[in-house]
Image 1 (cartoon, rainbow, N blue to C red):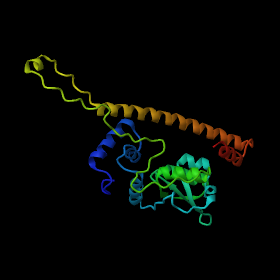
Image 2: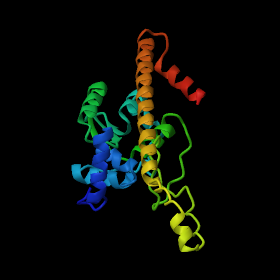
Image 3: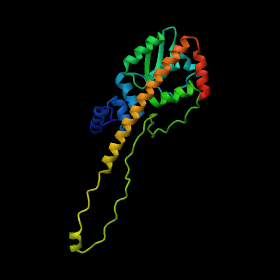
Image 4: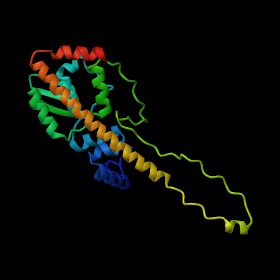
Length: 243
């Protein structure tokens, strides 16, 4: 990222400190901290791994593209199907994390196809999933100078919350000496950073709980389908009506 000119040493060190404190992938962390936008991260990853990129918001995909990959697999691995060559047993998927080789291997096992990744932003994958699997209307394209916002993540901007004190009127020197020194001003920026770090920790904890519940529900759904109590098409139809 430094060689590509999208990140400098100072911000990299700050991101590494946050990664050491909270964990997580460095690439996602620099996006969360607002140091690098999704599009730049996507481009750098593709260049580094010599992969192609795809703009899912602008790509002309067939409406039945969702039939190439089951919804539960697409959501679980955070990917979106792009194309399938049945003769070559080849499935092309869009992913924001092409370095997750384990996930790609699990997809190959689940689909019995060779998986070829192309790189897309996580927010574009989420929009494509909602559009092609659930029939949502496409979102308006974001302007080129506006960095995409990752769903579920918040970019915080530190702004002054207290107006600067008005200048004190001049007073005699004797009175000034008698006045006690003013208390030190709190570092508002440091306090806000602590609050943000605490909120981020709480959000990540909630995401872990929700992810665990989703996995449990998916396992239960698979058992119901295997037992013949419900078909996958019935589940998707009910899910679509509920939305």
